[in-house]
Structure formats: C-alpha cells, structure tokens
Length: 230
Image 1: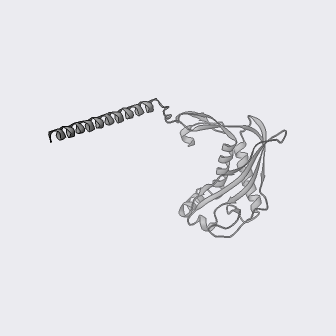
Image 2: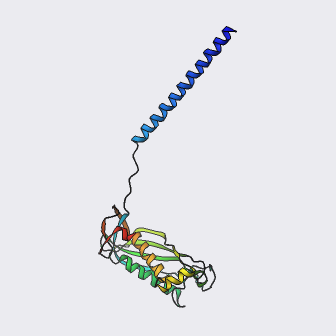
Image 3: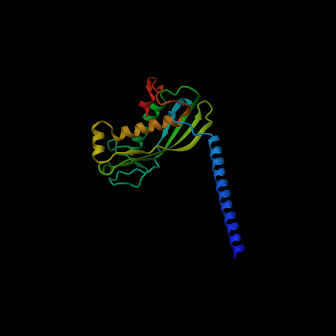
C-alpha cells in the first residue's frame, strides 16, 4: 500500500509538470506569434480618394445604337426589351438614346487633350430605363450597358477593348421621383450625368492618392476641395 501511494504521488507530480510545460510552451508560442505579427507590414492609414487624369487626347467619339435592339413602349414594370426610354416625348428612341450618349461623350471628353490621340467607339447594348408605372411607384435601376473601343486616331489600331461597360444607376420612384422631377432632376439628367461620369472614369488613369483636405482641380479647370467632389 505504501509503495502504491508513492507511485500515485510520483505520477501526479509528473502530470502536473507536463501540464506546466505544455502551458509554458503555449504561452511561448503565443508570444512568438505576436512578435511575428508586430513585424508584419501594417495596413495603410486613412487616405484620400484616388485622383484621375485624362489618359488620351480624344479626337472624336462615335456612338452607334444598332436598330437590331428591341424597343418597347409597354407601360409595365419591366418590359422585355433592349431599349426602354420615357425621358423624351414619344419618337425615334434610337435617335434619342444616341443623342444622350453624344451629349455625355462631349461633356466627359471636353478637356481630354493630353496623351495619345484617339478615337472612341461606343456601341449601345442595353438602355433599359424606368417606365411610367415603375417610376411613379417602386422605382428601380436604369440599366445602361455599352461596348467601348479606343483606337489610335491616325492608324485605327485598337488600343483598348472592345469591352463591356456597365453604367447602371438607381432611379427614384414614387413621391421622391415626383420631387426630383419638380427640382429639374429628370430621368434624362440622371442617365446623362451617370454616362458622363462613367465615360470620364473609363478614359482616365489614376495618378495619386491625396488627403481628404487637399485642394484639387476639377475637369473644367476650377479649384475645389476633395470633400466637395465625393
């Protein structure tokens, strides 16, 4: 009995020592991991937005709205068609959509006079905006898709594309849509502004990341705080 008690005591002490060793080993591993983590590259702190600069000297923009695209005048929530447009009076929807793209292209490239001289080709794939029924109830999304190709102005060699650009933008509904209309923010204004913004971005390149309080220059040449451009 005495020998058995001694054996049990020795075994218990051994287990205790093993547990202490394992605990110390775990603590050492954690300390090592923390030490390694402290040497890893740290994530950069808060920075301002990436600024863009025109990448090309845009000589011309050609807009094509294929007549193979299906037009719908159905006043349903989501007509099955490629072109759904209610921002102009009833008429030639192909011509109306082309006029919107022409306007947006002229606005977005007006100051693009640096870099390689290019011609930009835009082919409309989808111009599916809100019907009256959708606009004055639930609202939705103006679905604006087009192919973009950038070509050397002298040789015609393709420098970029063709690639699909998706420029979807939310369209207000119900009372908010009415309020926007009364304030002059029509569907035509919304989609033209959106296309202008997207075309300007797609034909520009990032040049710097600036602090949020930096003074920059707008595309029209006037100075502005970054905060006002967000």
